[in-house]
Image (cartoon, rainbow, N blue to C red; front, side, top):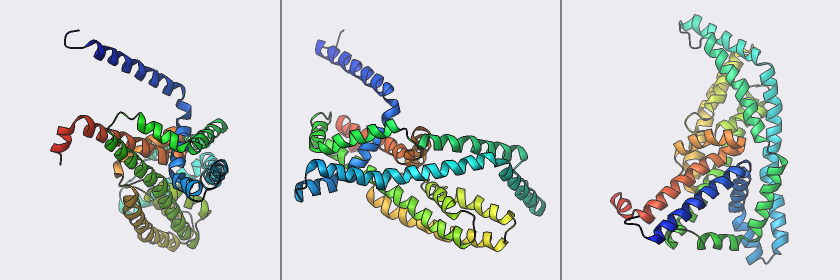
Length: 343
């Protein structure tokens, strides 16, 4: 081959073989990608307390790792599992009684059309939306309840990563294809994005669930805890956020036969309180931890939920964030002229 040295040709073939082998291994282990992401995320969250306890407080390494793993199970894993089980039972009820919800939507549409002369939803549209919800909700929730094997592998990986944390980090630094300063920048960016998604989204969801639950309870909504959890998960979504839950809930309350002022009060409360909670948390805490673009969150959640269930609320945006960060590092490493021209 003219213009190509023998070493370059060998290197190209080697990289091609390595890429194909990596893709093949990823395909074989695709069911456990969530385990790898989960172990990595939990390690990043627990890295600081791990090194504080083992290096500054001189606690035994194995005992500290076991204690932090137990802590992560009860604080992070178990609550999500319990919420998933609760939501699964409720979702089954909604699927079995979706005809009742369909009728409520029809009544609301008929009354709106009679008062304002505007047909917001046709019968065909209502039927399609309801059927889509009946099919989608169980699928998402079934993906949420991880299998026992995935959970075991995640904690097995987490144990070895925490036990040999320094060695794992040093191995990654030694085998990084980038210059040391770019590798350090990459590590900092990955850590910031992980903290932003894991902590920021969790705080945002819990805050939205807490304040929406107060509103549902104050204005007499049935099963306020259930709807608060649903609202908390929806609150993570940018742009639409909690409105996709509390607006239909308000409409349901208005046409369900109860006092109209309950629905009106709930709508005013959610419009004033939940909107401000979203602004405070999303644009202060999450921006401080890691300024993730709303589009990354939006599309990350779409792909993540389909792959990992509710874990996808964290992992989906992380995957896209990691991809964007790698593109930026690649540009700084191998396209310095283009990187300088943007400054």
